[in-house]
Image 1 (cartoon, rainbow, N blue to C red):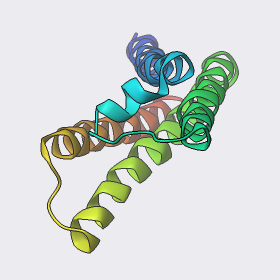
Image 2: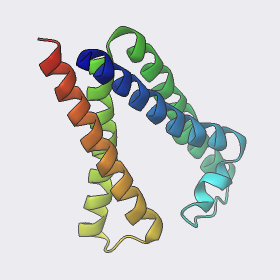
Image 3: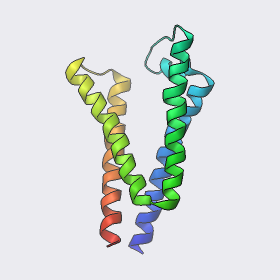
Image 4: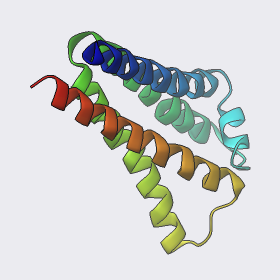
Length: 133
C-alpha cells in the first residue's frame, strides 16, 4: 500500500512540475514579453524575442516531454531529474544573491518555491528507492 501511495505522489509531483514548466513554455511561445514582464525586463529586438521563445518555450517544452516520458518509463529517474532541475534553479538564485545582491520579491518567492520542490523531489526519490529494494 505504501509503495502505491508513494508512486501516486511521485507521479503527481512530476505532472505538477511538468504543468508549471508547460505554462511558462506556452506563455513564451505566445508572448515572450509576458514572460519577461514577470521580472520587469523589456525585450527590445527580435533576437531577444527569439531567445526567450527558445529558452523558455522550446527548452521548457522539451523538459515537459521528457518528464512525460519518464513518468511512464522510470519515475525515480524523473524525480532525480526534477531534483537537479529545481535544485539548480535555486542554486542560480543563491549565486545571484552572493554576486549581485539581494533578490526582489519575485526572485525570493521563487527561491523558496524551487527549494521546496527540490526537497520534495529528493524525498520522493529516496522513498521510491527505499520501498523498491
